[in-house]
Amino acid sequence: MKIKKRCASDRVFYFLVWFLIIFGFFITLLPFMYVISVSFSDVHAINRGQVGIWPVGFNLDGYKQVLGQQKLWRAYYNTLWYTVVGTVLNIVFTVIAAYPLSRYTFSGRKFLNFFIAFTMYFGGGMIPFYLLMVKLGLYNTRWVMVIPSLISTWNIMLCRSAFTEMPNELVESAQIDGASDWLILRRIAIPLIKPTLAVVTMYYAIGHWNDFMTPLIYINKESLQPMQLLLRRILAQFSTDFTQGMNVMAALKSVVSVQIRYVTIVVAIAPILLVYPFIQKYFVKGVMLGAVKG
Image (cartoon, rainbow, N blue to C red; front, side, top):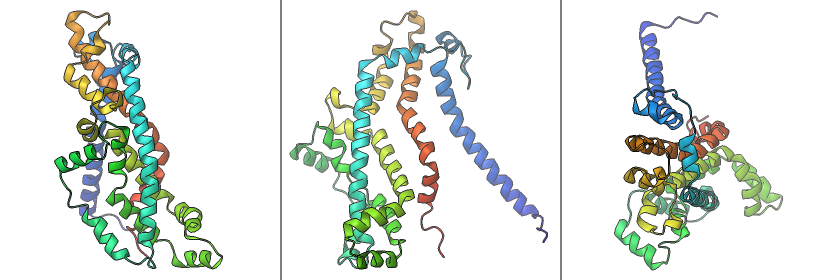
């Protein structure tokens, strides 16, 4: 059977699609490549404007200076703590909330679904929330980064939809064999929605890793501040703390400060970039959940 040739309108359509994909790829990739290139380049080459998307005069002085700072590792530890602990608790409570909402036998399911969805559109505001955190004793503690964002309405809906796709016959067969709800959840339900859980885990982890407003408002102790606030200080203070002690001329201090900024940006986003390829296959499956029926 011969396949019909594409008509002119189809060719134009596919050309535009590929053009937009390639264009979007380059406008996204090129700035990131420039940041990496500057972070590995020689300060004299940066000062002369010779650096493009490839490093010029390859050196690691900026990385040595940044990675040698105690405040960076403290901020790194705080960010990892908030991300790991927060994400684990997020997944546990999201699954516990989503599974009952997906079961038709759970009374009050419709009301709770409406009540949870209602919180997506209405909130109490920043000042009442700030006063609540102070009243609860969470201000200037690690748990202020975890407990207020313990569950996400959107992620609960994703998990609920995934649980809903699970055949009722499978659950009924397990119940006939004497399985409890906890056993069904652990042994049957959770393994069936691993792609969705991978996506939700990624959403939560990136949210914790990139969270800026929460520590800015609720954490004043420098010993508890995450990487994002350190980046803010570096950008605001032109990296003067980092350039002290470096063997560079005064004329190059501002250039070194720019390089220090870019090095810190690379160091801050590297973990997420290293983790994403391992769960990318689950990411596509989870995002497309429910897109095709039948």
